[in-house]
Image (cartoon, rainbow, N blue to C red; front, side):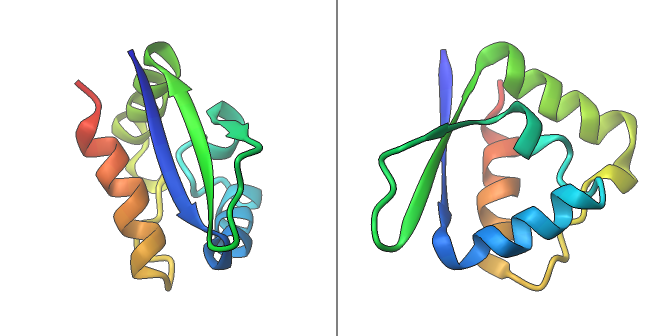
Length: 86
């Protein structure tokens, strides 16, 4: 099983800011960027193992994931992904 996460292109600088400070739960390090970027969004995929690592990162250190990032669409995408991991 794999997971797909779509992030608005306007949220990519915020995601980069979170990642640079260690507040993205490892999203940027674990995700595979798909070069199917549209004018409005970018797509990232995770294998089952990568998705579980992302979830474990958040569960092991809740401070490693900042959901109040100033962008509700980014927070919704990241939390929505986290909630889909089964």
